[in-house]
Image (cartoon, rainbow over the protein chains, first blue to last red):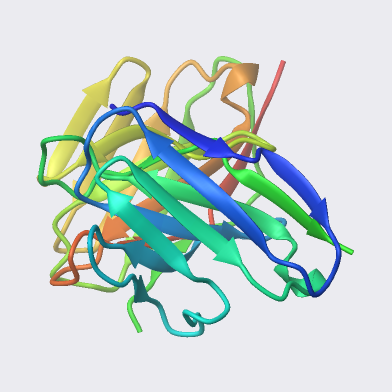
Length: 116
Length: 112
């Protein structure tokens, strides 16, 4: 499986500000996903990050609030914009396996965000 | 609405016992089934995947799939305190480009 890193690992932010989370993979992968996991809850898919094109967002998530970049096959960013306390959550990136077309996903360590 | 259902627990078993975790899914077209383990404060890690009906064993873990009943389970033999975690069941979203549908997870506690 790929080695996935995320930065920052945690942050405390003021409402109204924005935070950009980075996801780096040690090999080229086709599929990259961004999830949110609120305390005690399961995973909610925010969007699929598509290399070279706009991300595909799930119902309830919009590009203005969660802009995503994917400049190449090893890197993606998620920005949480104009934050409110309701955005406090763990944000996770996941990837499909390198050089394989399967549905398996591997997760980065996550970014724990607290908005005051 | 495609769904994956799990008993939220908590499920408590004594050390050395067999823990049985269950999952049902609604999408009859699903072909790939996954079990992830998530320790508190950590990200999910893949334990097993299964594609075919029947059993698949990996060490102390056995995944069981019954597509006719839309049911997948995970058995953990000789449970250890280190198995205490939340177990997430995920199912592929048939026809929807690699996305997974996630259950809410079952919390397992193994008592020494």
